[in-house]
Image 1 (tube, rainbow, N blue to C red):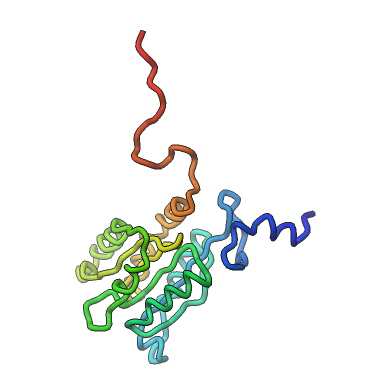
Image 2: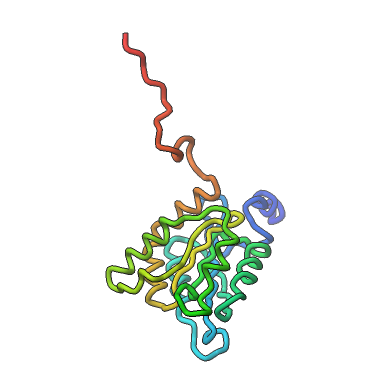
Length: 205
């Protein structure tokens, strides 16, 4: 039997900033994956209402074998940048999902404070979320949420209502495992790229 310290050494490259696994390991992936919810709501942050969005994120994360951290709950506005920056530097989860601050009121600033952190944007992800939600809620089209990758972490802005979070997670649950594989560069050779078949074509005789 391996000594616990030996196991720690073997998996050291798979853990980020000392994070401990929270459940059974997936043998096809090098480490347990973690989702960090950030709830952007002045009323939830000040205790005026109970947050109902983070439990939905946790529910869907569990379906795909991801762990979920306790939510960070902050008021609308400028605190988004500090909260995201702290998670990236101190925790480095595979995924950060924000909820709230994607609308058009003056303090809806989540996209503005998310975008500067992104190394790569994933516009198609948010298009898919808006299209799915728009089937039952036409106002879903006005959500300004963005998605992308920052320092190896996927960041996704969802709207603030529990219904909108559930609709977003219904889309993301099928995408996140493969998306995180790409970000971590876990792939068989030539599985991704421009789709070109690089195998040599036999010469005709």
